[in-house]
Amino acid sequence: MNKALSPVDAAKLAAAQRAVEYVQDGMRIGLGTGSTAAWLVKVLGEMVRDEGLKVMGVPTSTRTAELARAENIPVVTLDEAKWLDLTIDGADEFDGELNLIKGGGGALLQEKIVATASDQMIVIADASKRVDTLGAFPLPIEVIPFGWQASKTLVEEALISLDVMGRDSSLRMNRDKPFLTDEGNFILDLNLRRIGNARQLALVLNQIPGVVENGLFIDICDVVIVGHGNSKVEVYDINNGTMEEETMGQEVNKNLFQDDLD
Ligand code: 5RP
Image (tube, rainbow, N blue to C red):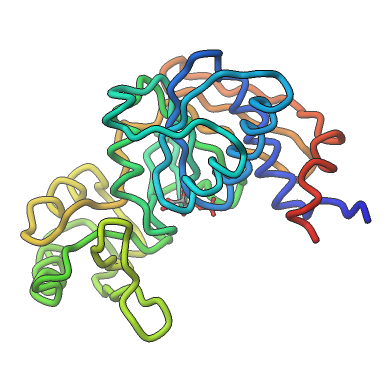
């Protein structure tokens, strides 16, 4: 049976298809985590298989590593790759300066290390991720399990003097147990509602003992590609200050990803 992609999946696929136009033979590529990044891995896998593209992938999570291996994309660690040409990842929110909230999938630590060890970071997203001001999506921060409740209290106290609308935080759960990151840490989700000064918040959070990293990506992302359900894409390039619109062709690829639709 040949089902059509849902509008959201068509949007994610269109963004992924546009993103791989940045990929060149021989590149070392950071592979993001999440449902949008999964489309990217599949499109890249198709290029490896059908076009003989030669790349090395550095996954940002065990989930993405498994997916990349299943797609026959050669996988190496960041230490083996040393530095990356490009990272392509999803995001939970992006603003007009291409600052991001990431970590909805719990992989923010590896994602931030990989993105900052790259010459260029491209985010692929559907239009629902675009916001005027960051903060409606709860900001994930990774904390070590030891004394996490003390870290939570310190975070909430620090938020009093910062430009945010909410201060509640919650420990992310996986059924009845704390969600564990790939590093064995916990995630606190901060319900800030509106982040007035994301740069300041990111700096303050990382000063708090027990906080390993926060999900604010400030001045890291170079390009955001927004996909739409009708296969249109918008490409925002912060370095060039440009926004371009294009329409991607999806007909062939729809069938290639049929397994995911059944
Ligand atoms: C994982 C992330 C993801 O990129 C983010 O959650 C977006 O995921 P999706 O593409 O499934 O909406 O930061 O830690």
